[in-house]
Image (cartoon, rainbow, N blue to C red; front, side, top):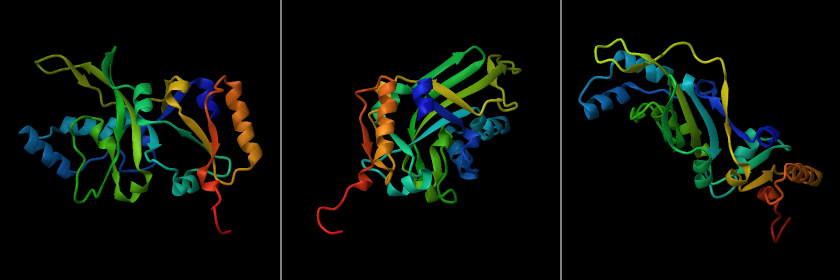
Length: 232
């Protein structure tokens, strides 16, 4: 949270460092579907690009729901955890759709909803290099995830007769993430402190927010700490 406030930027983790070996992967079924849809085989050099694409992809993961999740508080946070709330529209405004070229780097970014599948029965679509990063196994469906993704793919002069440029599937970049500048007032709609966090902790978080001149940003105790109207 302090990093977000101090740097005014959203951290995106490199795709091959997210901890799940299935991140960005695809299957033989993906290749078969591509052959049917495109009327051509999936070339070996393209297969290598798709396999290595997570190295040049940067991801920020969000939970998409109307209410807080007790499971996610328990898994990803302790008593001193903080959750940042946004909306799909706010996140898309912060990380807008983009396809451009910056020197020798092909840049694309956008916000995508994760689809949860059984990789033995359903297969990630190879519609673009970002596609496989939008799929996860059914075991993770409780995350109800939406992702901000940015890809920075290096390109080199093509050796083919047609010329142009080709993707460079070389060594991964030395950095493990990207910092995306954002306007905090526009991206964040509210902040919540963890269930069972003491009252003084909420006050400290509110004071820190004021220190960064975000007085209109609301900070709440988790709704999971609400007491029933009747009963103990």
